[in-house]
Length: 200
Image 1 (cartoon, rainbow, N blue to C red):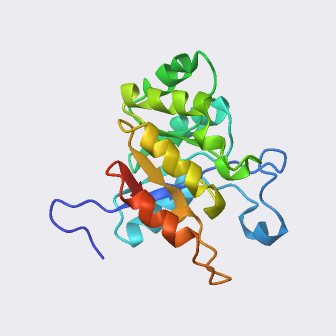
Image 2 (image 1 turned 30 degrees about the vertical axis):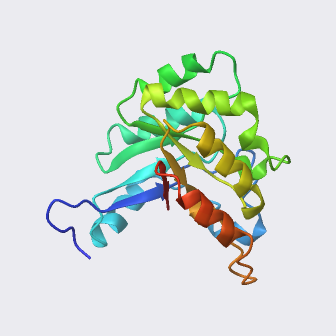
């Protein structure tokens, strides 16, 4: 379980927050155990005990303020290797926000909470695709956060942005509890054909 030669072990998906129910309304009664602060000092000893070399902090709120919060946490914490933040990719001048974010060496990617969008085709809309394509120029990845019903739009997005590196969050959230593998399995096989997509 320890690091092997020339190989680094990274926890690819961590959230940090100072818990406020107004900011994290998605944390409902079923998740009461995480209604508290989670900061790098809470995580670091756990990672060390399991032989991890670091983690990636991922946004949990869609705000530029959270980008600054996460980057401020990451800078003095060497084990926080990168931050996946958020910008409004549909803005006509999104390059300004991307340049501001990508100017920090710990900035590694962007995520939008697409699973919460009422339109299952949100990711495939031209204005959103246009914004995602701009990530390549800033060497930023895009994290895909969707439910299985939104995977067809994710497949379209990936095909329309071949120069962008994508990371599928939570393996596309298959309905494991109900043992319902289709159409998730079919869509995952299709998405896996793209050379610019990884999954976690």
